[in-house]
Image (cartoon, rainbow, N blue to C red; front, side, top):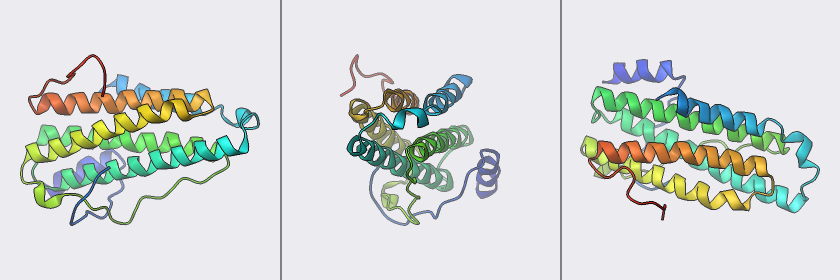
Length: 200
C-alpha cells in the first residue's frame, strides 16, 4: 500500500505532510477546468486592488487565508486517508485526485493573496484528526465527506463577503468543485449524492 501511495502521490506532485496521530475538523477535465477558471479569474486582480478600501482589502486577505488554511487541512486529511491502508485501489486513486484539486485551490488562492500584497499562510506541521475512529474505508470516506461538506458551507459564506467580484467568482468556482467531491463521496457511501434542491 505504501508503495502504491508513493507512486500516486508522486504523479500528482503531492507533498507529504506529517500524518497526525490524533483528532479534529476542518476526474475529469471539467473539474480541472474549474481550477483553471479560478486562476484566470484571479489573474487580473492587481489593477483592481487600488479601488478597494484598505479595511476591505484586509478583510479579503483574512478570508482568503482562512480558506487557504482549510485547503491545507484538506490536503493533510486526504494524505491521512491515503496512508491509512484502508482504501481500495479505485478509492485511493480518487482520494489522491481530490487531494490534487485541493492543492490547485491553494495555488489559486495563493496567487490571489499575493496580488493583494500579502502572504499566504503555511500548512501546520501537524493536524489532529479523529484517527482512532477511522477503522474502515467507510469511516475514511465519511470523514472526507464531512470535510468537503464543511468546505462547501465555508465558501458559500465567503462569497458575499468579498468586495472584489473576481474573488467571489473564484470562491464560487472552488465551491462547485468541493460540492462535486461531496456528491461523489456520498454516492460511494450509498447515500443520495444530492439530498436536496438547496444546500443547508
